[in-house]
Image (cartoon, rainbow, N blue to C red; front, side, top):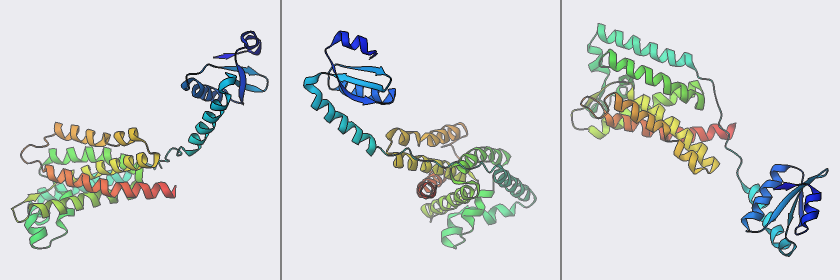
Length: 275
C-alpha cells in the first residue's frame, strides 16, 4: 500500500527502512517484506518512495533486501534471438526446382529409379548422391504440392532463425543425412523412397534446435517446452496427410527431424554468440 506521510504519522507503528527512486523497485522490495510475513507500507514524497516496517525486524529486513538484490544481479539477461529476413526468394527457388524435377520425371520416368533413395544403391553400391537427389523427386503431384507448401512455411520460419542461405543449406543437409541414415538402417532389406518430406521435417528439427538453444541460454523451462511447438505442428500436419499409413516413410521423417535438431542447436548457439 502507498500512502502519504501524514497518514503514516497518524499510524505511528512503522518506521522508514529503505528509500527507492522508482515505484516498481519499491513495490518489489515491499513484497520481500510481505513474504517475511511482516507488515510494511510504502510512502511517497518529493525524494521518492520509502518502505516502512517494524523497527524490531529492521536488521532482518535489510538482510533480506541484500539477498534479494544479489539474486536479481545474478539473473541471466534474456537470451537474444537473432531474427533474419525470410528469404522468400530462396524458398520460391526451391519450389521451382521441385516443379522442374517433377516435370522431368514425367518426361523421363527412368530418372526416378536412377536417383531415388535406395538401401542397396546407397549402402551396397556406395551411390551417396541418392539421399540428396531423392529430396527432389515425388510420387505424384499431390505428394509434391504437400511437401512444397509445408516446406515453404517451415523454410521461411527457419530462415528467420538462421538466415536464408544458412537455413536452406541446413534444411537440405538435414534431409540428406536423414535419408542416408534411413537407407543404412534398412539395409540389406529392399528399400526405396523419395520426396522432400525428410527435409521438411529437418526444418522442423532446426526450429526445435533454435528454441532449445534460446531456452538453454535463458535457463527457462517454459521456453524449453515451447521449443517443441514445431514438433506438435509437424505431427498434426502429417497426421492430416497420412503419416503412418502405407507409402509414408515415417522413419525418414524422424531421421530428418533428428538431424535438424542436432544441426540446429549448435548453429543457433553459434549465431547467438556472434550477435
